Length: 70
Image 1 (tube, helix red, strand yellow):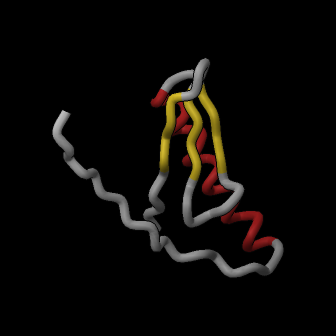
Image 2 (cartoon, rainbow, N blue to C red):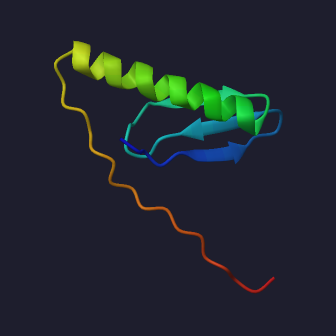
């Protein structure tokens, strides 16, 4: 499956979350580290849902970039 991930710059690190998986977050010192950690967080989150007998949410978020004049 392919989930949308949002990575944001925080004052001293980067934070990531997955809109389709509430509560699935990660933070890291760099974008690359944050990408690695959110991938691991997604896997862990899905394993937890399966272990609890809960349904796995299908990816449904749509991501687009919109250009606006500077």
